[in-house]
Each structure stands twice: as structure tokens, then as C-alpha cells.
Length: 199
Ligand code: FES
Image (cartoon, rainbow, N blue to C red; front, side):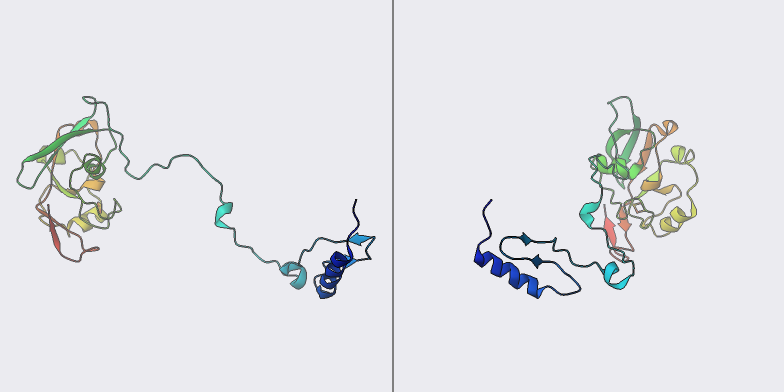
């Protein structure tokens, strides 16, 4: 093994003289017996005796490769096997009839099948932009809206007796053939004040 050169020894010696008593990091015992201890500064706990909480770095989170499932994500049923739902425009003209599965909500189905139903708060019952008018026959089969939904419906543009929030109406088998009519406009108090948005 080659011996350390005189220049190298001088550099190590200079470094050793700079190290502080609080953080002894280097020692040098001459050119033929060189020893360098690990240069590790004292921790805050060692200096102060107090335990310090170190924030966890973001990259220390466990890695997961499982694909996340979005709220209201819809899986289209095989054609002819799903629950039928017809969307109509405000004049009662059919936009399209689609099929969904039990548990799918009207708003998610509208998005899946490119029907222009906004849903600004993404189903958190904080807007009325998913307002739809259900045909009376199927409206009577729905569970009653809760207070939160009723509060938002009160803000809806063009409220009717069978109005519901699309994000709160979930398909069941006995709702097969239901019609959801879009109102002529929606009003989003949270995003655009009281301005109505026409469909
Ligand atoms: S999307 Fe906002 S209440 Fe339905």
C-alpha cells in the first residue's frame, strides 16, 4: 500500500486543526500512521440533551403501485345488461340514453357519457350545478333528499317538484328507464356568484 504524501499530510493536518472541540472529526498522527475518524457533527440532541422531532421527508412515504379509484368512477356495463337512464335537455328532447350499474350516480354517469352536467363541487353537496329534474314515476322511488341536498336545491335555478342533485341520486334496479332532464340553466353560488349558466 502506498504511503501518504507530505502534501496530503499537510492538508489533513490543517483540517484537523480547524475541527472544534464540540465536533472532533479528524486526528492525524504523522505520515506513517494516518487515522481519520468519521466526520460526523454532533446531533442537536447530543448538544442540548433535548429530543428533536425531525420532519419526515416527502420521499420517505411508502411507494404504492395500486391505481387509485376516483370518486364516482364509472365502469360501463356490457351493452344491454345495465340500468337504463335517459338524459333530456331542458325542452324535453332526448340527449342520449345510457346504461349504468347499481350504485352509479347520475352526475358520474353524465360525465362518463359526455352529457353536459357540470358538477362543480364534484359531489360534495356544495353547489347546485348537478341539478336534474327526474320524471315523476321514478322520483317517487328515490330515497328522500337529506337536509344538505335540500339546502343546495334551494339555490338551484329552475327548481321543480321532482328536482334532485344528480350527484346524490344513485341507480338501483327499480330505477331502470329513469329520465333525468337538465334545467335550462345552473347557478353556481360558490364559483361564479349568482350568475346563471345556460345548458
Ligand atoms: S356536484 Fe355539487 S352538489 Fe352535486
